[in-house]
Image (cartoon, rainbow, N blue to C red; front, side):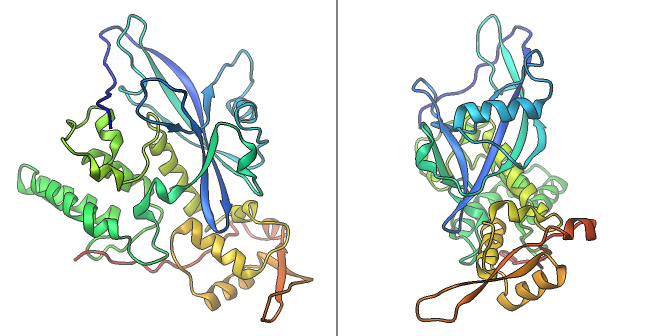
Amino acid sequence: MQNYQNKVSKSEPKVTIDLSAVLVSLSDGIPKVLLIENEKGDNVINHRLPFGPFNPNINRTMEESVRKWVLEQTGLKLAFVEQLYTFGDRFRGIINNDDPVIPVSVGYLALISRVTPENLSGSIWLDWYKLFPWEDWRNGQPKILDLIIKPNLMAWIQKAKGHNSRLERRYRVEVAFGFSDFGWDAERVLERYELLYETGLVAESLIDGKIPFPEEDSIYDSTGLPLYQDHRRILATALGRLRGKIRYRPVIFELMPEVFTLFELQKVVEALSGENLHKQNFRRLIESEGLVEQTEMVLEKTGGRPAKLYRFRREVIREKPSPGVRFSRKGSKILN
């Protein structure tokens, strides 16, 4: 990794508004996010989220603007769109010249169904667990936690000056990563990424000049693909928001086809949450919540019984104030 850091200008910076879009889809049970390849230049980060400026002289609202330039950049017409958060950092986008600019970014989350990535020039649909490898618990505790994250965070705790500071750091680490008796909380994605950034365990820490460049940077090959500026922070916010939202809103069905099996629905929920769910408990939950209705169609299987096909029952939106897939968490412990 090249030694490339943002320069701080002594001039008074201007502030602009950028709109960043997290576009999420699924392919063969893999949750994916759309990334745009950066143009060739002196950037060490090769990928970014789709983003563009907000110009109130052209578009009446930010959402109208984000829909327009996402269509221009990716060819995708957005359906479900939700504003996430406003992101700002004094190192973000500053360049060392007489006219420095700090872009403030407003993040948006959009869900895309039935996408054919091959048709999108200059873009790539990437498994989001390649950006957050510690977030996928479907095959058990990710190895990166014991091999890299746990020992480095414990060392960071011990480096704190004073007993109270060490206790504060330990509490933050235990809550974010489910250490000790707290248990893993799938929605704390942003807290975990921010801790790894603060402790210098992700490549963005180097690029922002937060820590000096080491002689070897092999650790950063294991802690996920870095993104341009603070785009991985925006993506972490979107992932945490979506994991929470599927529990109280039926947004999961934005990613499903018109008809589907309950097994397919379960695999999508597991892919987004990063956790395995009990098959029978999941089916009872879905049926008791009134989220789906059975169709007269079946899916023929080779060498097995045909699977019943279901569709989303839209009436549930009027019947319940917050219908969602309220699966129970296992609360995995990963450290004493």
